[in-house]
Image (tube, rainbow, N blue to C red; front, side, top):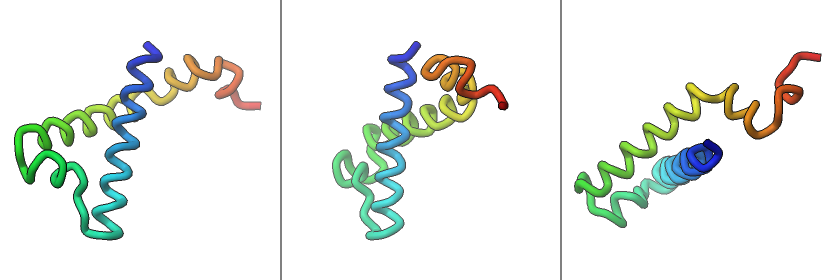
Length: 75
């Protein structure tokens, strides 16, 4: 399961970096690499969205898998 966590985290980072470039410089790296609204760019955007959804839904269980139960227990 950790491999899925790592892939999802990497895709979320790609999405965050792309949105940072769009926000600060008006530059869409994914669209420039794969074409504006091409099937490849839409696939990347879709995978990034699914990865973000996965990360949001699985947040607590990801913490338990990586850090153990003690890391999220209240003191």
